[in-house]
Image (cartoon, rainbow, N blue to C red; front, side):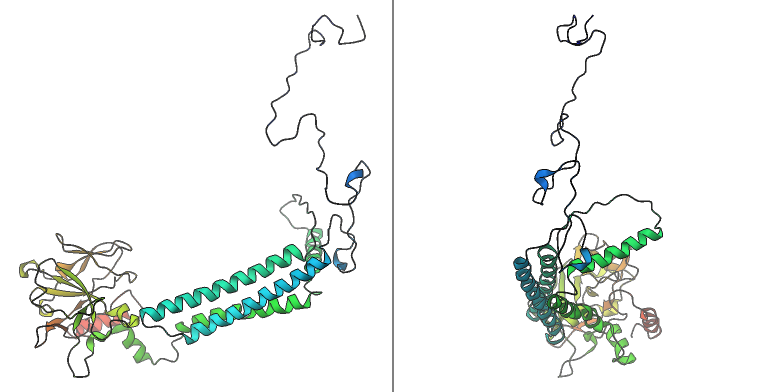
Length: 399
């Protein structure tokens, strides 16, 4: 026997009968099994070289931050860096204020109606709003990262209930955060931030202005919803001609003579008025006379040419995909399908009403013209649409 356990009969020096211990494989990124389990050193802070059992975290002492006096681990920002960051953040807030004012002025003053004007409005509105939000966010980020002090925060798990001491701690944390942010001490940042946020709060009120109908008489409002320009006439008292969308070319009935053909047309004189085209765009379909079914009003056709509203009755998407063999008009948004040979009745999809039919004819020169407005309001439903359709049925198909 010997007192030295390594002097045994085993060649590796371990006592007989004791199982061999195997060191588990080390996972990349984990500490070595020989390394002591301790918290990582706090490099860059005073006293890290002499850390030991009696080491205490440095206490933050700065008269400019009275709310965080005595908080361990807080590291203040460099004063010169903080001052420079304050000027940059204030400049960002001023830029955000100017961009938001420009956004509001652009929305109110820049009129749309044509394609070029609408494109310019989109660029101006999107550019100014993007610049405002980017400048506002940049100023806040600079404020937080280069002005507020830095510190280590350890968050421990607590029960879900919020006892009184926790609520008191939250209140103290809020007060301490207000002190750390310098919202009281940095008056320039506070004032410029409030100045930049003021137009942002007013923006929804300006954007929602379009929903206000108090200044529009009820009769005029209902007329705008129920009627289109197809019921109007030119200065010479003649009905509006149907022209090809995009080119503005009038259409002779004799030239549109191929069965199965389809055209997208708009009222002459309104080719670039987007507000008008949103309701008045029409699709023409050429049929053989024997292909038309009972749902189509033959009195509103000319030589097999039928005109339907292009605005889907579901949510207002352009329904212009046409399947010649089945005579189906398809809306690409939600796959509502209409039978063009049978009054554009719904055969599939979420749409609940057929596409309204437009009465068409020809003028003395043989060009296709509108003989009146649609018999029912076009597009999706609105509150009084049911009343308008009932009135149209009572008047024999006229609003």
